[in-house]
Image 1: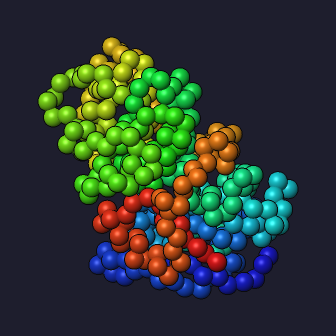
Image 2: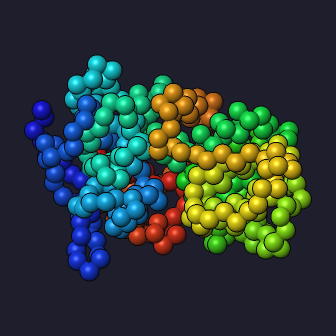
Image 3: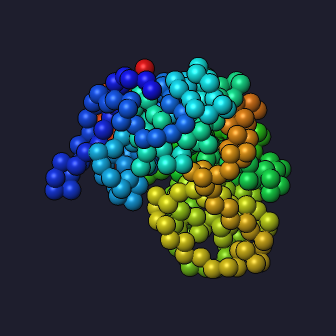
Length: 332
């Protein structure tokens, strides 16, 4: 076993339901058990990481803890023949960064079943430009495509479009020839949304129906939703016949105030996206798409790279809803 210390962000209880974040030295021997030890080169910041880093017990049960649900790096040790020292790999989701020490440390140790070989066409840094957000966006679009939603069928609505999942979904859909309508945030970022491929910008007040009607005029061929709540309900009621809505977030609300009419009168399909535990074959297919025909050439426009010592400030900014696009953490 490798004997080495490494840098990591550690979140610990400070009393009175307060939590503190420190960059400390950890020992590899103290990492959890697993088949594969990975030297993390890059991670990324997700909303779930911000929750874990602020003491949210719904995400992380025990502290002190190192968050980071995304990691890309090089295999340093492996007891599984699938991986050898020097292999470049991606680890996202499962329990990484939730209750297993995550990618905000320079080393992680995980089960081999969590590890995805880095696809040809992606660098480690590019993989973290996508991260769980990119994987989630790719899974969402795969479901739209697999259900037969084509560019000619009409506009695709993307909610939470300034966030990580939404930004990547807008960019991929636009690249594939879809007409994308993006829901703007409470802060006007229409210029940003247009720059990544949105053809139409929808204000939040225009995307949420308050009439209480059980079904609305057909408006969208499909949707990638990352918000939930009333916006998702309105979207479902506005989808064209046999359209598809994917949902992956609940930042607005986990509740869905809707009836069955869109489903039984229009054949609307609602697909939940579980990027955390999706099957490995589907996970690899999504990563291969991101490395190939869905790769976003203008990815740098939605990505900001920071060092580990700037992560604390960016977590606070994300919790205050002040983030847009993706934040990649350079762990080297």
